[in-house]
Length: 521
Image (cartoon, rainbow, N blue to C red):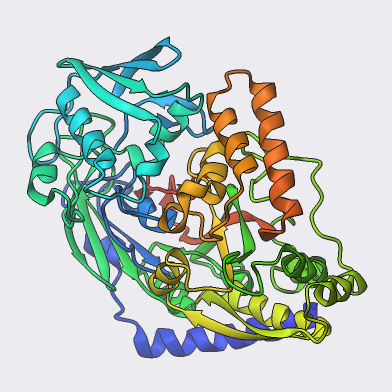
């Protein structure tokens, strides 16, 4: 294994040398963009080289953390946020209280304006949630706030959320990107259409978006909170990872993300860049479309689970980076089922289940994934392993946006995906991924329906007692595992390559890029 990694390292270094010599523009962004009069660690343009573009810039239509990470807490802000320890903190709301089981009241800040100069107030909050919940807008994220009957502007700086039923994790979803407050004039301009020019209250102001190429933000000179140290932020779409890393070496970029396991040695040996790592809330998994034959039979799905030797995937594909998962919830998420067991590697049991389901000689199927190195490698290992029980797998690799579109509309049989969990609460995982009302873009790309699971999820939403909520989530997870809706793979480890001159960068457990405190030396 070590010899293989050393060989790979030499190849990658050679490729980088070619890229640097032939592709570099030789431009040092951090120095060329600095504003006159700024200190050495203030001002300048931050360039983030990313694997894929955002599918859109409208929080009411985003289906991925990848897209939300661009705008959340940068352009748009919510009533509440999370601190560095992932604890709920005030943001656009200074304080709040629960008046009764179904009424929450928020007192708003009085010193905030939107990027277009209009005042932030209770009417703006109401306008945002009225749009999100409007059936004619048909937002795929409306399901997250399904329990909200009305958002009422009590006075200019007081707003109430009136719920149809008790909902314990309300604050956790108000801290996620779905709850970002949009300028009323922008809502009036775009109405039911997807917003192309986002306007919020955050520390950065939208300048432009060239789909497939770059998104540009400028510093909000009138931001109500701590002044950002950066003048400008560029999110550049750079699909090839060796190019992203070479951009760090030449000063053309400051952050390259995500970072694959195969490139870790290259970054570690660099004098100009270093590795950022942190554990996430979410997990990676192998999913089944349970409405498509033969995966509409739980015995077939379970057979696949028993035919996958996960330890060899964790070691061979991920080089033991990130822990093997037993659930779609990471250990840091409230509701995590610590004692639940995933599938044991057992080829005899896998063959028995396939024969019982009517496939003694196996079958042919497709496995879809996006153009992410580890996932492509994992797909190839799965292809090899499933041959052992007669399943012939055709691997289909797609660009990120195309892959997500296909998964959302159910154009899949087997697939490799991840769910990052934006809130740190099991509800965000369970309701989005497994509830019958969440099929498709809302998150349930398994197209799974189970009335008992629905009831458990709904009961956990209303339950105030934490211990009882945990019990409900544990039972729901056990049923999902028994019915083999998915095969858990690995707890997500956020990884990026960053220039050694960049300070203050982090990736939240939810997967959001945190850039508001960044300075460039």
